[in-house]
Image 1 (cartoon, rainbow, N blue to C red):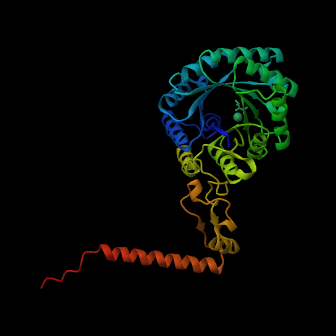
Image 2 (tube, rainbow, N blue to C red):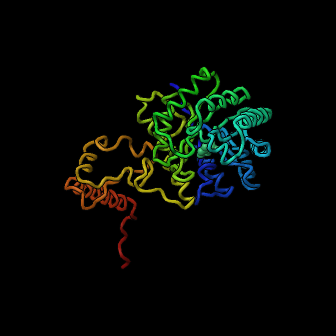
Image 3 (cartoon, rainbow, N blue to C red):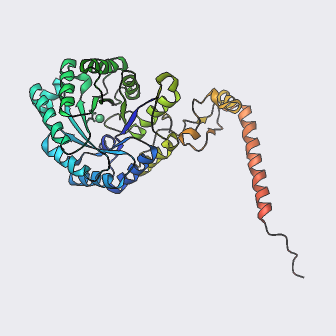
Length: 366
Ligand code: KIV
Ligand code: ZN
């Protein structure tokens, strides 16, 4: 079965959003957990941003094993040099070069022509390839770029040595059919080149980051860039836990697997909350406190009879210790009876355990 590579950018796109900054020690802890989770690539940071960022990426590159380590760089020599330095101790490094390709960004933000953009992309990827075995290129704002120009950009990137082509929906503007069509068009233009992986990177401004990522997969993308708890710029990035659980639960529809250990999802989510102090909303898919909690009587009755009635995956499968039947104004008699029976059984077992370990009775001294 074909595999989707999971590129985690919690420590870069996630960390650069307000309220989520982490120090080096916290980044290491999180990166170790991401490696245990089984992500394929950990984007550890943006080394040119500061000396501290460079050192943090270098430390992750030195200490974390079991996942490829990526570092981000604009298509500028000083960025590429900083990223190369930071990646130096990595076992499997990836240089991630990006440049905006929409006319809006080229004119308003960068003030360069399309031709200048093509030259910067080609020369910086070639420079990167002299030092790092794997180079990814991202066409920032791809979903609002002129498609013909985007195709040209991708051709230049591949010819210069990039083996991963990322087409981001940087501002969360795309809808699934449109985002998928962009991948189809670029892949067709390039003749579906061997040895090149297409990647989706979606922001959640319209709440469609996961849907868009999965649409890209249907159009041939084989890497998804995402973050734990969906943290990231503005409304966030595609949520890693939602992407991987969707691919697992709907495997018969997608016919694809990931290397992620689903049972580590809850621990990863909680570790990020603990480090950043930002709680996960209770209704968050997969890892929210209510994801496996049932209060309505009809639902509780169904869950007691067969959990599949109202759960599409078991809590244990994603590392949540247990489901909960919450007693509230919507609960029914069946759940109440069941909970009383469970409480009774727990008390009985506790009493039996205490009795078994208690010292045998000694007579009072005379
Ligand atoms: O959203 C985006 O376009 C990015 C790129 C730098 C990959 O984060
Ligand atoms: Zn992004």
